[in-house]
Image (cartoon, rainbow, N blue to C red; front, top):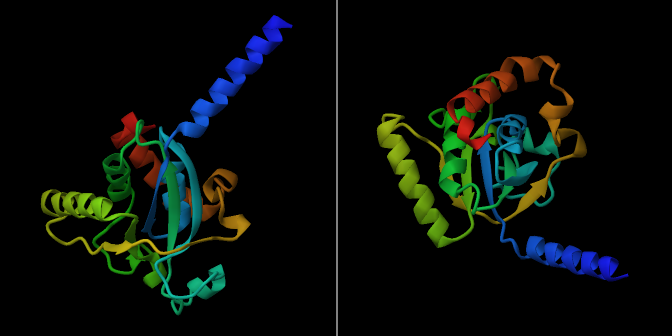
Amino acid sequence: MKYIAFFLILSNMSLAQNNSNQFNSIVLGGGCFWCIEAAFEDAIGVQSVVSGFSGGDVKNPAYREVTTGRTNHAEVCEITYDPTIISLDNLLEIFFLVHDPTTLNRQGYDVGSHYRSIILFNTAEEEKQILSLLEMYNKEYFDNSIVTEVKAFEAFYVAEDYHQEYFKLNQNQPYCQAVIAPKLQKAREKLSKFY
């Protein structure tokens, strides 16, 4: 009986510790959300990645509406992470490696404003950090040609179920093989410390 009581106390302590963890979230868009999702899903310290839409004007848009460009939303991922394991700067390092932030409203053959490069910040402090890092990347790696939109986060709308974990569930699909797999391989090779 003592052992059971001791086990229950330890279990409750463990649950309390897990619940006290402070997770942060950031919303990023860099082309098709399937690519962004795949790049972050297995990163160390990332708790969850959800594909959806943000940055636009219409509440609860459907994918078919977003792809027309009329909602002004971008395909994005909401990334929840443990900042004691992976920092916002680390996440942005992955972000700028796996997409081209210099092409306006497109990533490769994916064209339209819903494919734009976008970062949605939560606080003024986060905005300052993002803009500082973006300025550094712009000067050092992108010859001052970054067109990434940096905007205050307002709302996130979860995409339809079939968009969630798309790469994991459809790795043999031609788009996954031709577009997502090379980006994922590049991230894991160049930024292996995060995987």
